[in-house]
Length: 462
Image: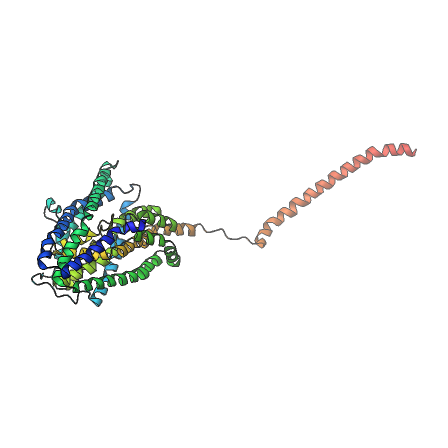
């Protein structure tokens, strides 16, 4: 029953998609147009929440980190590992999309053509804004994320009693609750929007979604079996691989049951402890990973971006591909504390790439379809990444231990032959002297006895 309850949201969303498909295929154009604003309500609510949600959750998570941990050392290496692993998963997904082309059967929308986006131009506009108030917009999500991270680090340094950090955490929890309330309306909004989508593109859109799901499952399976194994091997050799597969089942089951990275965090912490991972590292990397390390979401992001490329007839230039990889990596910086929390990732894609607002629900549908396997990939991937971080952080420490052990070499063994010359003089000099003294004492005692005993004997003889 508990597992069924956890999947209730996904089941309702699936039912909403089915009903929306039926309405789009068989209802009149007038009816579909009439219910379309119900989808707009959901989209507008989510875009209203995204800015305060991202700001408070990211800032509070960093500000509330354990101050005893070596954050500057561990955090830097953690982010580098997260970026590299997310990039690898994104490249693998890109290969899958280019090979299969799930939207090849869809006719692109007319009048939606956009110019190719230059990589440096897109990067500059994405990470900076001309004014502080521009941060308070869904169009500048990446700049807001960077600002939140830096502010969280600064609060961690100056807020010794962590009063501000705890206050931000309260607001963050309130925003998550707000999102959860809005999600109760999600099935209605998605049903209305999907009906409009099917009415516009016909039944071919369903085939494209099924192809996208198939690509996701295949790419995820390859990434799990090949790259997670590789990360564990690099971190600990054959024993690292055995250790990973011996303990990862708990995280695997928990993530599928809860569909939440944050809800799976306690299980991941237990797995890390059971594997013997350094707690100083795991206490920083795993909580941070539950928020900003989502390889499963990076794979899904590539599928979503290229899905929209085909729908809106966007040219796939080399610069556009680089931007897609960048966005796929950055889309991992989303909140997944509740089922469906990856919606913020879709908002990030739409805002950074400049897609029309209507694209949000279109790719959010892909997010709902792959939500369970994506969460599993996100959670399970945190363990081998933490193994890599631990090896990197403790590399110098282990090297020093080996140097110390080498300098403390055992003394050379002394053979019995080498010992005999030193012991021989002691035996020849001390033992004879001792024996002579003992013999002299015996002679003196015997002589005394003889002197004492003889006179009586003489008298008796007489």
